[in-house]
Image 1 (cartoon, one colour):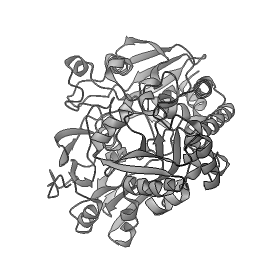
Image 2 (tube, helix red, strand yellow):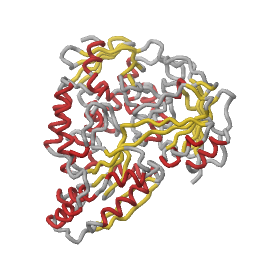
Image 3 (tube, rainbow, N blue to C red):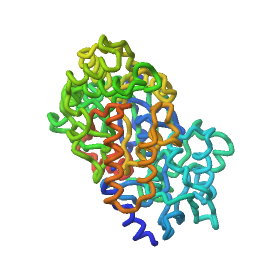
Image 4 (cartoon, rainbow, N blue to C red):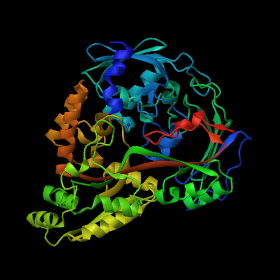
Length: 506
């Protein structure tokens, strides 16, 4: 099956996608983009990072084999082409001969092989490891060819490879143990300087195989809050900014000199329970919490209505009518009965963790949930944490409940297998798996018929909502604001900033 047919095979998936600095960074040159965001990256290892703030930086520096475009279609990145075998148990990539790392060295098949071997090594603790467990071996017949031999058909594999968590890194840097201590990728920008929680200086990668970059670089300032970012935009100290707070975003269109980019995204806001801790180990308690929550009220209060109530599947082609899912209409009477049935008629006390600033709505979401759950006797204590501390606790599953914003994917399997399969590498986060979830995920992984896959994952979603280890709340938007002389930025449903590679300053 050639690339044309393999792309067709995946069409169902693609359709189915405190102040750190007291001043704005000075531009490296007149052609550098002056940019601002509130939350800085927490680390530089593309294989390990889960925080949105880290991904947004790293996707400007590193590249995967393939990536998604604005329509969630898979397009070339480091790879120029790919081909699935007829039995879908082998995929062959031809690398772009012009692809180079930012030190001028070519990206070779050896680098690809070393990158995926690192991803698969349990010691790496790679964020997306579970996506690639079907890889039985990797062959490199020449410097420009990589052959992945699979233990079973794996339809979503190509979509998983489009993530920056599957970035291609230099084999020599893996050997040297420098991944994460410096950033050396093949992407459109080089990281020249990083002052954590203060600023980043990036320069254009003149050797980037993706085409000519019209700006000399990007100078990023980490500013204390988003009202300060809006003020910097108003005074033209900043050309382009990432906005996370929907309330601030709604103010941008009132500024005639500014442009707001507002794009629906696949990422979802969620209340995560920890079923390994009492009383969340009790199904009736988890279901009671789900029934007690008014999702629309959380959306309207915390996110000023900027979004829509969602089930687990947020990608086009798989999204269901959320109102048909278990207890998606608040039912306090049912919730109280479930609590009584579980032996908690008088409620219980628990702590919910949330990160300062990411998402911007986290504290407000926690407060609304606290108020709603009080109606069924659940006393919810809120613990706000700095993002890096929160991420560490989250990855360890060290919480009773957590307010989270998790990334979406174009395919249900690559979005959720790391959480809800028996081989998932983020089981410490979920602390829940059952035979039904695992079986449906495996069926969806190997099924090639898009219509049958949709049925499988609809069953998966229905069951997941009923067993209620998490309570899905809503999807929202990604927002960026820019001066009118900034042209060419294209937002995506993944919330990616990769479009900055195509920006011009008029």
